[in-house]
Amino acid sequence: MRFDELDLSDELLDALDAMRFEQCTPIQEQAIGIILKGHDLIACAQTGTGKTAAYLLPVIDLLAETERPDHAVRCVVMVPTHELAQQIDRQMEGFSYYLPVSSLAIHGGNDGKEFARQQHALRSGADLVIATPGRLLAHMKMGYVDLSKVEFFILDEADRMLDMGFSEDIMRIVAELPADRQTLMFSATMPKKIQQLAKTILTEPEEVKIAVSKPAEKVDQSVVICHEHQKENLLKHLFEQGYSKRVIVFSSSKLKVRQLSQAMRRLKWKTAEMHSDLDQAAREQVMHDFRAGRIDILIATDILARGIDIDDIAMVVNYDVPHEAEDYVHRIGRTARADADGKAVTFVSERDQRRWAEIEKFLEIEVRRDDVPEEFGKAPEYRPSHGGDKRRQSHGNKNSSRKPRADRQRSEKNGDKKPHEGKNDATEASSAHKTKQKRRWHRNKPKNTENK
Image (cartoon, rainbow, N blue to C red; front, side, top):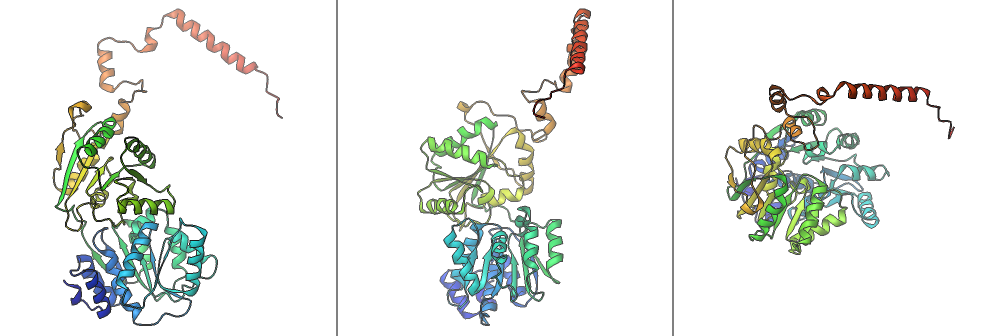
């Protein structure tokens, strides 16, 4: 369906035409009509499906029909991160270009001047406020935020907000909203906690569910079965093969991101790191440098897997296998966007083999396997039925003195004795005597009276 087939204003269609938006995505086609009719909505759609436009377009049109009351907020969009708030605010500027609808991004991680600017804007009022829960609550506690006239309350990436612990903050904000508002909830997944939240804050909602899409066909996916210690050399090898610009490397922890980024910088690659320990100013500078080409390789946690709009990523590397299949789709969805080609490489160590098998099952394909170069040593066998087994990992622990069960049985069968069985009577007697002496000493030991 085309946007001009929807019941949107001419001014909004002009803005979409200037932005070269022509065809609706499935979530836009289904959600826009429901929102324009005034229904509450719960929508399950992953990042990259166009859900931001699905709620912004109809809400902008509805807000433009009437004037904003003085010093009031008419729409609140709740988001989990600073980056997503900024991204939505940029999209809002384009969509509302020909309409008298104002917006304001409210998020933390900035200096006192920015907080004062947000404070002044909230006192004056805004048609649409895009906010992270914590920062909006900080302003609300100061008494100058009027939410009594909110017409629309929107939760974007609701599942992620609950995962980040924002449930109580959201309910505190909901308590200040009028009961007759229109509430829209968008979530990539629909676990029980999201369903429960929907029952609490939505009224007779319509439901839209867009199936989790598979990776774009133009993504060249490959996997390397390797040992953990081989990963860093494999990454260098990729860069040396020419895949060293417009790259995002996803790792599982902030510590590993820092270590890997430092290692790559020592080798003179133009690398930066992105994780939640960076303050807002640092994150913005990294993203600005990456977009401008001053940084070629971005090493990040899953903070970049969702909600960041960068269209020209050449390659995504999963240095660590993501925990969920949907996370894998989100990660590699950073490349091959806007009908471009892209490459996605995943390193799978022994402990992650079972998890990788689950991802392939979800994808319904067997991803091409590339070999570890000979100079990096022998790679492990691919045995996903064993990979990730905690019991098996503990048997392989260098610091463990306990033999695997099969080895113990073999030893006993061959007549090997347990350590205590090899002691002679004199040794045992000596040991018992020392134990008695130690017990007697502890029993008669004078009490420590110091520092009383």
